[in-house]
Image (cartoon, rainbow, N blue to C red; front, side, top):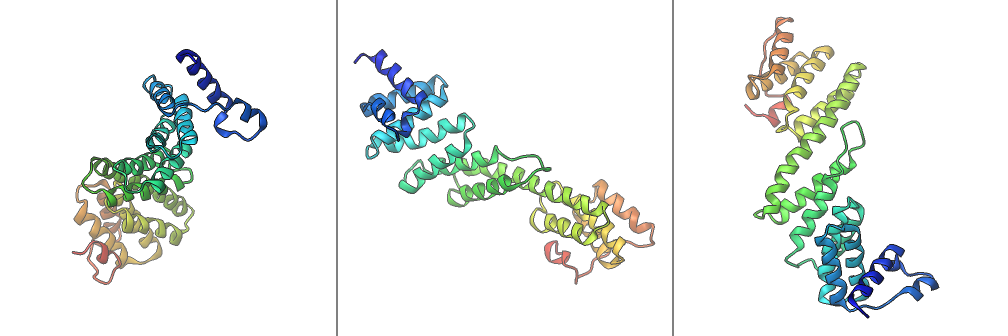
Length: 269
């Protein structure tokens, strides 16, 4: 068996889906191959950025030689190869399988990070369902929790900030929708969520201002004054504070701290 023939044979097998042998025809096409040859072929395809072929070859390493040291390496390399083709679900499954079988492996931090990346890169715009964003948040938190001093954690923290800003943006969008329909209590729930869970995001100043608007509309003046006071204390140069201050001034009110307000527990003075 020449090297070229072997390469063509393996590539054809991958295209035909030999990795999922279930029928007699599949079994007829099955050819056992040396683990090092298979692994090197996968690495060669990876180096040439032929990621689909690389993923299939790495999967074949694990299938044909499940108890070899090569199989452990192939699992994670298959996950990476799937990731590079945007086959995120396959990448996540491969990385999770690696972690289940080798939880203490030195490559475990990367496996957790790769799972987080797969979720993160599927974040959709705020107008759509945010389940993937929530999945990204929890996965990034897991990386930071498990490996706080790693380079993966450093990058995860940056991505976590962006993820939470995105989630806050979704709450703001829904809150504005309800507010425009004069469904003030539903809108307040969304704005409060931003303040309570995402107060360090870029949406916090607007959320506080929208609360001022809602509380004034509902006649809850003390809460409106408190929201404006928190806004002025934490974001004094924000346009949202100027808007809130103008609203209160138009009603002969000024921002005022109320110790009994729920806001005082989040932003103590």
